[in-house]
Amino acid sequence: MADPSNISRRMSLSAVVQAIASYGPISRASVSKITGLSKQTVSEIVGNLEEEGWVRTVGQTEGHVGRRAVVYEIVPDAASVASVDLGGTKIRVAICNLTGAVVSELVEATDKSGGLAVVNQVTDLIERAAAQANPVLKRPRVAVIGVPGAPDPSTGRIRMAPNIPGVGKLDAPALWREALGIEVFVENDVNLAALGEHWLTRRGDRDDLIYVSIGTGIGAGLVINGQLHRGLNGAAGEIGYLPFGADPFEPESLKVGALERVAATHAITELYARKTGKTLDVPDIFKAANEGDVSARETLEDIARQVARVMAALAAVLDPSCIVIGGSIGTRDELFETVLKHVSRCFPRPVTIEKSSLGNHAALAGGASVALSRLHLSLFTEGLKGVEIAVPPPSIDTFKKGAA
Image (cartoon, rainbow, N blue to C red):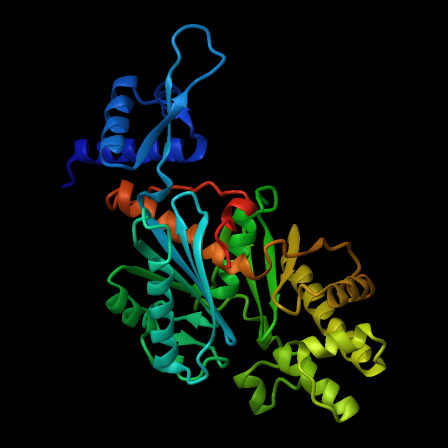
C-alpha cells in the first residue's frame, strides 16, 4: 500500500508548482491561498524548489500595506523539452525552456530516402538544436514528435504516412528513445497543431475546435471539450480518406485517400497540368493565378470547392465553435477567401472559420505544450496518478522568441 504521507507530499508539491507556473511571480502567502496549504508547508516546498534550482526570487510585492513579500517564478532554463514537426518535405525541431519559449530551432528538408534515414535525421536535428541552445539551458528531458500519420498505440509504428516511405516498417519511437536516452512521445502532427492553436492562442472559450491542415497532405485535429480526440485507433481526423473527391473505390484511394487526391499539393499540380499541359509547383501556380492566369485561377477555385465540402462535412458532424485552417496551402489568402465563399453556398448555417495564427509553428506549439506537461508531471508528481499540471501558455511572441 502506498504511503499516505508520501502521496500527500507529492500532491502538495504538484499544487505549489502549478500555482507558481500559472500565477508567478507570486508570493508564498498567495500560493498558500490558492492551494489551501498552510504557509509553513508552502514555505518548506518553495524552499526546497529554490534550493534545487526550479524556482527563483524575482523581487518583492508592491503596493501592499506593511512588509513586502518575496515573489517567486519558475526558472526558465532549469530544464528543456524538444518539439518536432516531421513533415513529408521539411523537419522542424524546436528546443523550448520551461516557460514554453523557443530558444533554438532548426529546419531541414526531409531525407527522401525515408525510413531509418529520416529517423536518424530527426535524432541528429534534436541533438544539434540542443547544442546550439543557450549554454545555460539544461538539455531536453522530453521530446514530442509530430508525425504525418497515426501512431499505433500498441506497436508504436507510424501508420498511414505515405509521404515518408518506409517509416511505418520501423518502431520509430523505440529507436528515438534509445538514441536520445530520454522520454519520447509520438503524436499525429495535425493533432499537435490543433493543441497548439487551442493552447497558444488562448482559445479557452472555444473548447470544440477543429484544425484542418492543407499542404503536402490534408488532415484534421479535433479538440472536443478541451481535450484531444484521437478515436479508437488513434486515427480520428484522417479526413484525407473521406469518401468524396476522387473515386473512393479506386485502389489509389486506399493508399492516399479520395479527398487528399483532389485537395492537397499533388492535386493542385496535377489539375493545373491537365488544364495547361505545363508542370508548375504550387507556389508558382499561386503566383500565376495572381498574375491573371485563367487556368491557375480555375485550379485554385476547384480546390477551394473541395475544401469547402470538407468544412461543411465537419460542421455537419461536429458543430464546432471554430474551424482553423492551416498548412502551407491552407493559409494562403487566395485559397482561404475562396473557401469561405463556397462554404456559405453549400452549408445552411454560419460556420466560424479562421486562418491559423501560428502558421508553420502550430504543431511545434502543440508538441511543446504536451512535452512541458509531461515534464512537469515527471518532475513534480513522481508518478502520482490522477494528477495533471496545466502548463500556462506563453504569448505567441514569447513562444517564437528563438524561432528560425
